[in-house]
Image (cartoon, rainbow, N blue to C red; front, top):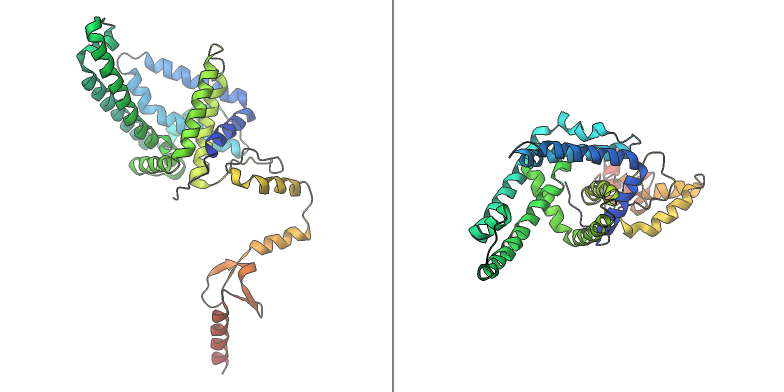
Length: 325
């Protein structure tokens, strides 16, 4: 599977397209995300193990939401059942991804506590106070630990970003899926930087009015993951059935914006002979000599046969003459 490098502007476009996908069915999106939050809160009630269990199964929930996004493209409704749909297929590889992510988190936290020392650990976990002479040392260890955690957490998050989608849509094994996800994020690091900066700004804005904005932002983030997957791995925009004639502002490639606006004007008209000519122009034909498939407008036509070059046309005609003799 090829990993495409996209334009830097796509980082913003993923969010815009994600919001468009949310706007297609806002109430179902809110119900799905609210149900996920309830599930997370319920699992968190399990003493000691609650957070670990949810981390294990979170890729399964994410994969189910992505199946819902795909069904929305096909004209189907987003339902709460989509949240649990991935438990019926590929559940073991998805939980494996969650397990790898969990192990990575535990190792990072352990390393942070080791570097921070016992004083920082007691202050963070038990609220223990330190005197002024110890505060500078604790703060220095704290900043070093936070920086280390950030540096190690980013690659782990990159490896986990697309891996549930690759498992559920392409049946890729967990480790190869995480490798592809990491390199996909690395190859598109600039769009993801823009994506992350915009999300930070939107998160700050969303939490200001008592967190009400998160009702829109959280579904938009989920939908943007699906949009970015299609853009990077499939090089496709999100398309909805029965809406081909509408302006496709959610198209996942701004470099085709001008051609897209022209196509919308053509969609309003009935098909003309000029459009048929354009289709023939892009049609692939086969060279009679080497059987290479080439665009029809680039081929050499002779006696209702196509050739990729004059040399192959001469060779094929000479071979025909010899067979006739």
